[in-house]
Image (cartoon, rainbow over all chains, first blue to last red; front, side, top):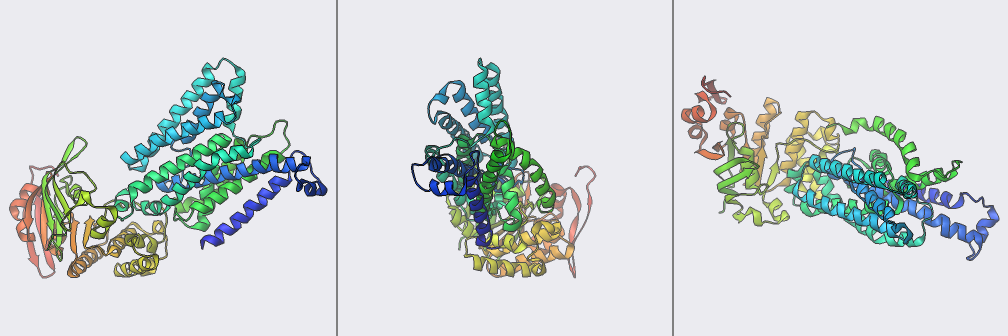
Length: 327
Length: 256
């Protein structure tokens, strides 16, 4: 299937969900209020463009980043179970955020996000170094498990030692993941790492195809594999770090998006990159919409929604895709 | 004319193990060289060292007369194609796409053409559009062999190209390597079947304990003395009308 024939419907679905995300929310708006919302300065315009629009955009950007990072990780590690969190970048970013909150940085605008991104970058740099030294995917996955566990343990330690229950619940709320109350400033701050990460991931694509033959055959393919592998790890780390910094830890989107598109995009990991990003964006905009529309006393956290719906959905995909995973 | 591949006095350490202790190997355009030796002798390591996939502690490895460690990725790919022993394939790409990865530096249409031609040579034209993970192990091995052929590089280095193939496919693989040599390419292959190696190769290089212990025409390289000392076999190669056979028995004092 040509790239356009897959990407066009995904993009249409994403735009439709985005419009729904703009149109529906806590404050019910009638048809005339949408018209008033087109005029700047009205309260309706504020709801639409300063509250809902950045929220929808944040969900789309974070979903796209996670979908793309997941597709790159699955290609790099030749493992359908890989996701953006597999190398420990999510856990590292979560630790950075937890440290920042417990240190009182939440008072500064963008302070927690900056700490999460910095921690993700440090984890990513460590992994890029490890990936250059150890080429076998299994080794990288083991390092990722160790890094994840260690960062998770340190986060637990912060909970454990935290003197104030307020900070603890703040950390927990942050880690559960949300795109509520994001403004255009948050999006602007995330733009640079997101764009750099996406660029690196797309550049690494042609190397991912070659890796399907294993490291040694790829090494003699003529492609600059060392550079492509480093780009894949660094790019996925940047995207994951920026996504966690913006929205907390959100599971399943990065794992499920590549599987959702694989049947149509084919097994070629390079061809699934853009569709995975679009599918991830649509999934997360949809999940955020669902979280807002499901009537609960406390608004459902995005990470909770994706896990609740994502896990069964993923089991279904796994069931149907089991055939193409052999080997 | 420079040899397509030339390794001299290679020493390689893999962790605690000294995998190569002064191994040498030369392959010239137009010849098929068989690399034989017992399990763990260092055949694969020697091929990997020749291709710059492991670092040499001492000695030199040259491709087309140039130090392999100094070659850029594209230059190295232009000088050598490699079929690793590892037959695992990560994703279920169609067979033609896997074969076309051998010609990755060519434009997509040309790469596809080269892949289809190579698949035809290994008898896999009918399976070209099937997913490579839906094929049997032997069929997959043929597709990966086609990838090696599609490269069109001046040196083909194949690690166990006959492993896992049917008897007729083993002969076909070696006939195809012979055709490549006749087209002026240099071919080196590690082989386990000594009779097959003797039949298909111009020259055999015998590796034992990480060093080259014999190098010459098959009958000379696999002399009864080498068979006994290196392979623990009492016996000899016997020429028959349909090719050589190895008449041997295991020497009782050795545990294979």
